Image (cartoon, rainbow, N blue to C red; front, side, top):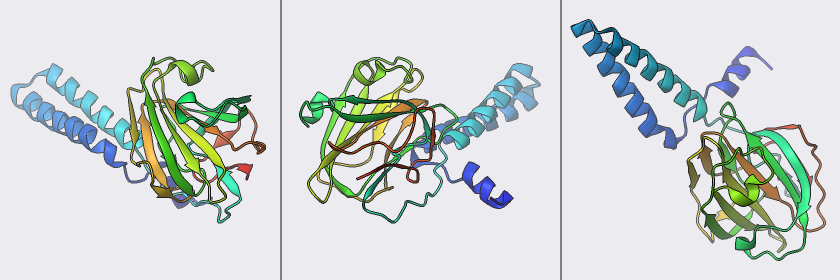
Length: 229
C-alpha cells in the first residue's frame, strides 16, 4: 500500500453526524483563543487548546472512508470495522420476530479508534427495524447484546432468507443513528447508520450459513467477507 493510499484510509471526509460537534468545538476554539489573547487569560487559552483537540478527535472519529465491496452476491461482508469478540449460535433478537432457532451470531467490537459507520452485509430489503432501550455496559461484554441499548434490523435477501444486524451502544456511546426505514432496498456495503463513541455490531447469519472468520480477527466494514451465503 502506498503512502497516499495509507493516508486515504486514515484521513477521509467526516460523516454528516460530525457537523454539530465540529461546529461547536471549532467555534469554542476560535472564541477562546481570541478572548484569551485579548484579555491575556491562560485559562481561556487552555480551553482553546482543549477545544482544538476535541475538534481533531471528531474529525478522526467521524471519518467516513470509501470502501470497495466484493462484487459477489453470495457473500456477507462485515457491517462494521473493529475486531471480533465472539462467535456463537444463539436465537435472533426477539423484537425482530425471526423465530427462536439458533443461528450464528458474529459480534464485532468497535473501539473509539475504529471507523464507526455501519454498512449493510448483503443486498436485500430492510424488513423490520426495532429499537430497544437499555444500559450502557462495556460493549465487548457478551451480555451487552441483551442488556445494552440497541437498534436491530432484519434484512430479507433476494432468495427469501433473512439475516439481522444489531447496532449496540457501548460504555461511552450514547447515540445510535439509523438512516434507513423499513421497506428500503439496500446494496451490500451501503451505509445505513453509525454509533458514537465506541460500540458493537452483531451480525446474525441465515440458518445453515457458517462463519468464515475467527474471534480476534480484524474487520473492515463493507469489505471483509464474513460468510458465504
